[in-house]
Amino acid sequence: MSQQSLRARATARAPVISTLCLLLMAVPALTRAQAEQPVPAPAAAPPTSVPVEPYQPPAPVEPPAQLPADGPAPAPAAGPEPGAAEQPAGPAVTDEPVPAPAPDQAPDQVPADEAAPADTPAADTDAADEAAADEEDSDALPLDDLRTFAEVFGRIKSDYVEHVDDRDLLASAIRGMLDGLDPHSSYLDPEAYRELRVGTTGEFGGLGIEVGMEDGFVKVIAPIDDTPAQRAGIEAGDLIVRIDGKPVKGLSLSDAVAMMRGKPGSKIELTVVREDEGNPLTFNIVRDVIKVASVKSRTLEPGYGYIRVSNFQARTSEDLLAAVGKLKTENKNGLKGVVLDLRNNPGGVLNAAVGVSDAFLDGGLIVYTMGRNEDAKLEFKAGPDDVLDGAPLAVLVNGGSASASEIVAGALQDQHRAVIMGEKTFGKGSVQTIVPIDDRTALKLTTARYYTPSGRSIQAMGIEPDIELVRGKVALDENPNVAPLKEADLMRHLEDPNNAGAESVDNANDEDGSLAAEDYQLAEALHVLKGLSLFRGASARQH
Image 1 (cartoon, rainbow, N blue to C red):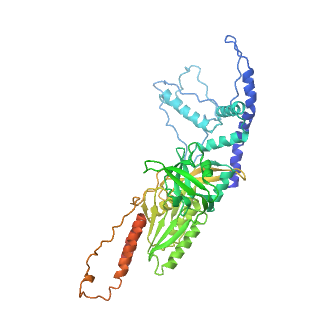
Image 2: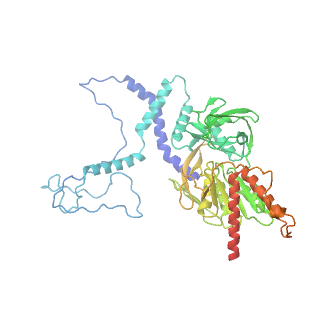
Image 3: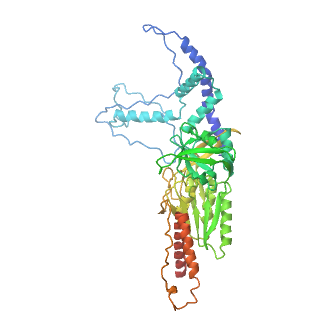
């Protein structure tokens, strides 16, 4: 957001802030005046003073309910001209004089040469007036509500059992305003603002979990790879109900995060509720310095690579390009396909998600955002180069894939560049903007929704995979005591000098079996890649 836009918004809010400050300063005087004012007798009540409200233009005169039978037909209601500037709500003010009624005309009649509306129900007119008034009131300063706020502020200052600092009260009021918007908007005090900046750099101390709030409890969005939380068995979707035996209910998210962080080597006990478990689970975890490597890669089989993106940081797109280069170096005959693993990826920096999507696309729209302000309306498009040169791509997602992960999955799905496999994603389709208030505090404010290239909104909907894979484990059958008889076991069988690769095929099958036992969804993604690679090769030979 530009500095000019921030200054313009600050100028627009100046009257609101000034009025609020005046009301806060006037609370003690108003309270004393109300207490000292004598109660008037009912018979001779003196005129009471009424606060001066902002000027409201007079409401338009309603048309008469009954018109002469021989009156002309009404003209159709004209809507605004295309491209015309929108007029403010409320009665229109014109420079034309209002004609006076004829001397012999009854007050409830309209001259015959004037176009009059037909019989209009009074209820419809009242509804239109109320709608116009509501629209006007929505833009007006709610003075009554501000007076109520000032009154509550004054009561707390004067009557609360303990002294409360003004700054603490105002900070709590700001938090309350943002907490009432959506789960992702919040007020960042100096500590929270500092933690946010540290989190995007990829190194911090704690347990290694991405969390949010749900029904007053801390919900695990996803554990980060190779961290104490993941090694202890914390899973996406777990609800943390106690931290070191203390209930989480009623704590803010920042307070809960502060309790979970601590010195490396110190211990913490988490009590979680898991959907598939009847009783709460207890985990004893040792804190550690969390250094997040957002991109990892390895070769699954010759020609088939695996890239894991655990979250989106400032350098994720550069790290992904380096990982692809490493896979190409390991596979001298080229890459036949790649699995991109976004499971339990809670999101992160928007630009990093755009960079990752751009790496696999050779053009077209990646994502666009829409909000109330022009600053929130953005489009992101891909460049001309595909780092895989069109090689098949399979993307793994699950319920822990959120936000930036869904941007990547949605872009690759809509552009028909990849097969999305796994489970339905989390469904966070909103963009948060960090708006600094000063050098120490900021607002994290939801400013836009993002949409996939086809116009889909993922908010509360998620990405549906092309191929759904249930989460589970595969148990391999034990090797039988007696191996099945084959042609090669028969005496005097004919030798084939071209059959030297049979042993390597058996070894490859063994590797497939071990991968399926280790990660069933990854093994299925590899099988899909092999099928796509075979189909691609057959199509190339036909042409």
